[in-house]
Image (cartoon, rainbow, N blue to C red; front, top):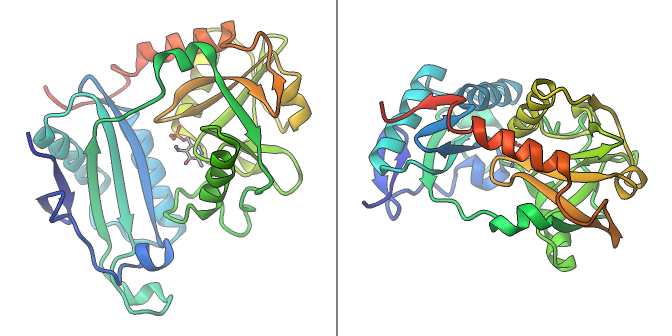
Length: 292
Ligand code: PMP
C-alpha cells in the first residue's frame, strides 16, 4: 500500500506532495498545524484537535477553505486511502503562496495538507523507567508576543529547546517562562505529583493547551485524583514525587531525573503508571471511528 498525501483536494504520492517556495508557511512559518493519533481505527480526540486548529486559524486570521466537518471527512478519507489503523496524522494549513513580503493579504489561498504515517515512539521500557531530562536556558515565547496557545508553524522557540536537549543528550527538556516558572517541554506538556496531588502549569504561564494534557486532567477527575493548575518552579520539580510529560506522540511518559536530581524512586511512579493505564483504555474509544 503506497502512502498517499492529501494536498488541496487531491491525493498524491509523497514525491508529488510539493508546495511552492513562495508559500508563507515556508518563508515565514505562517500557518498552523495539528498532530493527531489514530489508535485501532479511532481518531483520538478528533473534535478537540479540530477545535484547536480552527481556534489557531481564527487567532492568526487564516481562512481554512474547508468547514470543520469537511476537514473531519477529509481526515477519514486520507486514513482510509492509506489503510492505516494505527499511526500519526499531521494536518497542516499554511498561509499559502504569496509574494516575498510579509503581508498575508497577498496569500489568498491556504495550502491544506494531511500526512498520515506510522509512528516510532519511545520503547515500552521508557514508560516504565522514565526519561532523563534537563532544564534549558531558552525561555518560552511570551503570550503577548506569540501566544503558545496558537499551534503555529513557527516552532523555532521549540527547536532551540530541542537543540539544547540534543546537546545534553536527552530526548525532551523543560522550558521555563520569562518569570522562571516551569512552562512545558519542547513538544510536550509537563505534570508533577506531590503528596498525591497532581499539578500542571496553567496555560497562561505559556504553554500549549495540549489535548493529552486535557485528557489527563479528565482522567484525574474520573479516578478521584486532585488536579491543580498552578504555577510551579524547578525546585518543585526537583522535589516532586513524580514528574511526567504528556503529548500526542509521547502519550504519558515518566521522568526519572531532572538536572541530575533523581525524581521519586527514579522510575515511573504509581500515579503516572495508573494514569497511563487509564489513558490507554480511552485511546481506542474516545474519538471518531474511521473504518465502520
Ligand atoms: N506543547 C507543545 C509545544 C507541543 O508542540 C505539543 C504537541 N506535541 C504539546 C505541548 C502536547 O500537546 P498535545 O497533547 O495536544 O499533543
